[in-house]
Image 1 (spheres, rainbow, N blue to C red):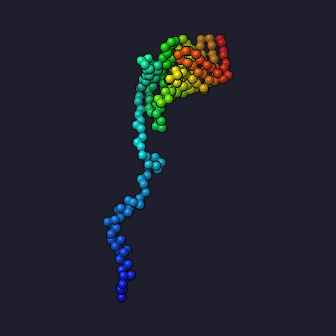
Image 2: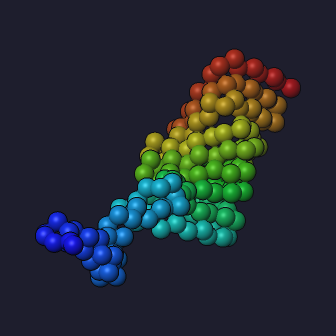
Amino acid sequence: MMAGARNLLWLIPLLLLLGWPLYGGGVRAFLAPPPWDEGGGSRRTEEPPQRFVLEGVSFYQDEAGVRRLRIDTPSLRTDPQSDKLLLAAIAGVLFRERGEDLTFTAGRGYYDPPGAMLYLEEDVRLSEAEGLRLTTPALSYQEHQRRVSSQAGVEIFAEELAVRGQNFDYDLESGDYLLTGQVHFVVR
């Protein structure tokens, strides 16, 4: 017959089996993998910034009570990866203290608030009331320096003049501009 402590070892598996309802939930929770995040499997410790979309926007920029910039766009939204404001079908005005204000249009672009820069793309057109027109695939406006520049190739048209160049830099306040990179003039 069975006698002794060695023969009582069969009670341990039986006690573990019968006690499973009491401690099994804790064991399962401890051994479970972390919850899966649909964004790539990583856990986020910070909340993402709030994003928005606005329709029919007129955006004005004033500096010390002087109007500097106006942008009209049917759609303004924030970029999911940065602080940029994405714009579509842009029309606007760059106001100058001396001389004619410059009007511009573009297919799309963005405004970078930290860098105080406006970038325009897709058939950008810049014009003065005097008849001077500039076309380029891309243009940037540096707010603090009050400069307009392009390195994507520009064409400038006036009443009796057509100019084509690679790089363009224009100071809005002084009216000085620099056109470089295989410049071609056509005088009519």
